[in-house]
Image (tube, rainbow, N blue to C red; front, top):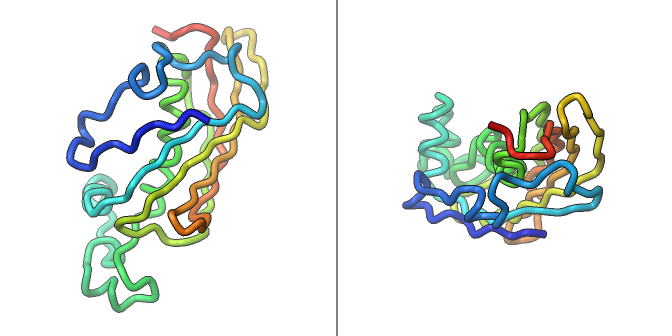
Length: 170
């Protein structure tokens, strides 16, 4: 598994590019991908994830943005939006194939436990299927993901399919 450093919460806008995070300029190619390949990263969740998530997606549910309200909830604290959790997980799939991805075709996520500020998520993707698409000079990579917090609790699982080229795309 390739582990990427978690981006510094204060420097989210200057996150490293694909060549810096994975050492593969142009992204991993379909022809170099094998069933069983794994990749992932560790991401520490900050208040900024919740605040920016609310702003970006327009979901200001008090479970996400109101400390006092969330403290009285069954969760005891603010929780990360499911769609943001899913996006954080899916981003790693995209970064591995950044530059060779033709398109992200499918992403399904299932949420198992809440994600809170301070949680450290270990995200692991495993390639489960490869479907050659000669017309696209590449193929579809299917992968399964699991995100586990620092307590060993699975917080989310995901399934994704991406159309990937054999050479960097323009």
